[in-house]
Length: 429
Ligand SMILES: [Zn+2]
Image (cartoon, rainbow, N blue to C red; front, side, top):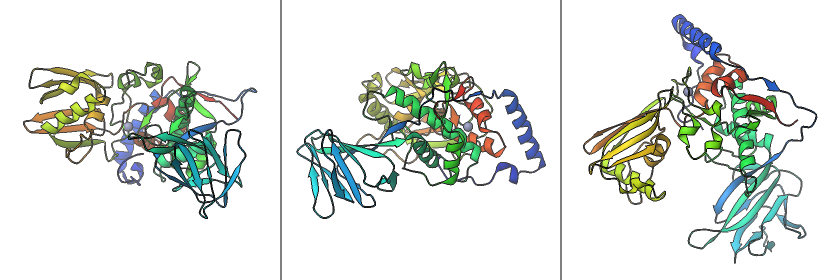
């Protein structure tokens, strides 16, 4: 989700003649570089809209499921049990216990997954999230041995996409920006469905994958989803992990350098390249945070210990400098030199994560390191970290897409700008 206060005014509406000319010139230069992907229409063999499995609760000690009246619960092969809503779910002796408000309930065997749905085929609700379809509840064991619950909602993917884009964008942003976000989110979701086929869920409902807070009611979100129904970005016949982030800061990242371990998720449209950018109105276009140098050392060590990385031995940093820069001029890798003469390398994305680590018992200080496109100045006890943009910087930039939408760019053109060389295909009716 984009950070900071909304930016409600279209730039062109509060810009003088010179500013308008500058925007027009910029727009023309962008148009020249845009390759509009061709949209393949559905063939006769295309199937129905799939459902996606969204993990909506992870190791929750208890859960409350609300519905209009009755909830139906069943385990594999068992008869349906009807329970009055709201239903409280807890774990007892390794099995799930579902209890209604009036004392009625059902206990399931240890380890058994329980499927629940509303008796009237209406939405279930967990917290504020309206969840269509059904919910699978599984008992799990938390660290320390306590029982907890995982909940996975099975949601028609178009309903899921409308929910994601409502959570990812400001509601007043342009319609075309919502359409770009819909195609990127759908592509990412379908690529994760393919990758996680053998797992118990396809996506998390958080920024680990995409933010989803249940069924959307925002008209713009529903309309953008419908206008792009079934459309995804593909490359070499595969649906792409169409990554996106809040603010590229002017220098996009490539998937390959950002996540070197995920080489199968870095096709040519996700490579770094110089491109025109429009996100300088983002509240985190540029940022700066300050840390104690000793805290930086502890953060690096803390991050490294959990990964068994050589940085776990790092001394007091003397310098942190880019040692690899991508074709857009963005640092991809840093070298850290310490006061013992040690030298360590770390990817820019991991440096961002490490510099936000919270070692137990230490006060890190305010402000987060928002991207790996950063510069570090170490001055004795104080370390100043100044950076550009927010997020990993791969693929679509949400604040760039907002500005391009306001300038009148159509969604297909914008997708060509953010994912050059990708194809647009409609993969279901
Ligand atoms: Zn941008």
